Length: 382
Image 1 (spheres, rainbow, N blue to C red):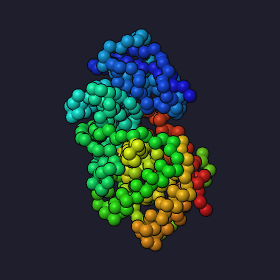
Image 2: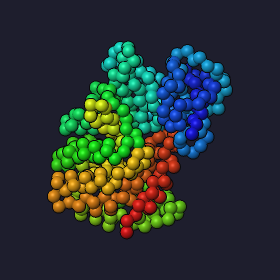
Image 3: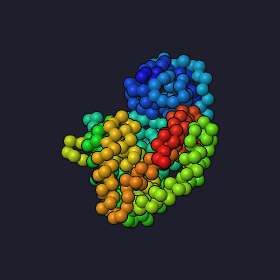
Image 4: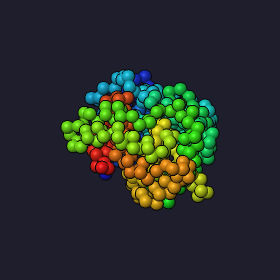
């Protein structure tokens, strides 16, 4: 699936120069912006010819920080004025300020933009020989707890998270390079290893939850789910009944005896790195919450990132670990009861994104809300 890119170019003083000639990007995913060319920083999405990613003809605003080698059309139909929900890294001058901050802490490095969208901006910092040294990540306000979460987990299992070099204003974090590769599409063995490595962390915070006050509270209450679902009752048959039954379902889940604890929130193989020496690093802690650990095992085994869905063996091993940690609990029953709640929770997360981002970037998530609500109904257990 092709992605054709048009860049609307703007100077550091905010003057719009016009549009560059369209080109085909290497990958279809809208947030991936590496290789767009030297001398510019992509700021944000301006529009697309389809309602959701991937692929299509996509237009971005890009700040020209050097000489632009291509042809520029001086006519631009896009409004690039301010917006109150815009992330600092999506403003003119935002990337330059963040790169200056990061290279001041890790001198002698060069920043290469990798990704930017409404959930984060990421740059790889290379040394003079082109080897990765660190990663600059900048997140919007609603993910501002990520640095706190990294420190919190590092106190228990420093080997499992990327080393936090520094954090700064406007959601900036500077992370040491984690060796290895991202494991998108990984099979059952990697998923099982992630689950096994993460269990001691969850067991620790289940017994010592006080630090979890510093991250979002996602313990089960009906009201947030009902609020997000209500506009879709007429279009998704069975959704109202699912929401009406949540009090009884939540009571049954509580009776299973699993404690609330640290939840990564997006625990899939693509958010893990492994290397040839056996090191495992779990990345991307912006979605972490205080909640039910079932959310993570269901995300890890749902197969939505192109990998396998190792439901039986990985879930069985996960359940056995919790039975040893909390004698008398019923993890298997909890997981079955939570199957429709997990996509409901995803819909709630996507709806929160839409509430906090500017309209031009809604296409990243708008289709996800009804899709996840419909998935929840499909997962309903009588």
